[in-house]
Length: 397
Image (cartoon, rainbow, N blue to C red):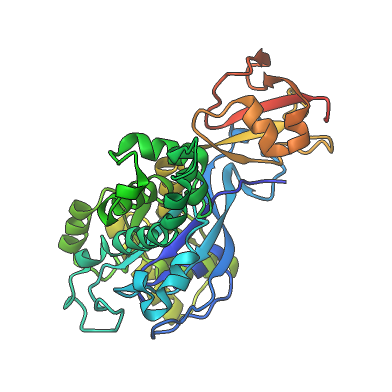
């Protein structure tokens, strides 16, 4: 058992490269086409974030299939949502259906065509004729207004309940927003950060929109993937970085080509590497293609796909990787496998949180934990960190 419950969603206008990103990140077969709504039903797959495996601190590598010579890949869910067009929150282009598909994602990767080769509707145009900076706030705005619409449509129930004795506005809003994936803590933090009327009968559209925007920012943070960076003007990438807090230049096509070549044994390459090594003779066509990608890597530094995934999970969502074991000396499980499991936990998580991540029974029967690196018992409130190896002692072990 390995991984976590995190889910990332790819969003953007048609033809920005979402499906190519999804294919490159998962190597799943998906339909990729140069026309709107190539994707109708969301594609779901498993991708991975990359980190250093703790086995690098031992005299041999571990037994996990997700460890490649000390590079650990930890699985997360990746969702590819159909292309959105302006007015999606009003249902245009099946927009409400596609926005609904984002509701269970922990974070959104807004894939932008940085080359300027597609217009606001996602239709192909002359490269550089459209300003991709226009697309930076597009997904955020559509998601904010979509969420505001849901709140508006369901607010009548809150108003009706407000006439009852002992009415609790925060409890009513928590129930309303919980139906769209917000936790009690998210709602409480959102309400603390905004000013709002105590009487729901005097709320107006602006109050509900303010609530929606703050809640979306807290529960669905957005990272901009400047795709097609290999053919985009460097000045455009700079302007995109000025327009958004988090921007990762990327070439999904380049990453897909490298992963296919690595899978075929033609090159040595791990997702996230800044270079690759050719392992066998290639055709002139393959050589030319690899040289083009090599030029991109020299200019951009990497393909950006792995970097975007890592940025979303480790930085934007503030998670880290922890490794539960049964034997604190050999860092092994009950089958004597070294470091078979890896879990993504939110910053501030404790050994008890790790125990519940492994299994609810392990958490319920939790007794104490041991830091396997230091071979010492740690407190229940000890905050774990990236790369920690922990033995959980539980009555359910």
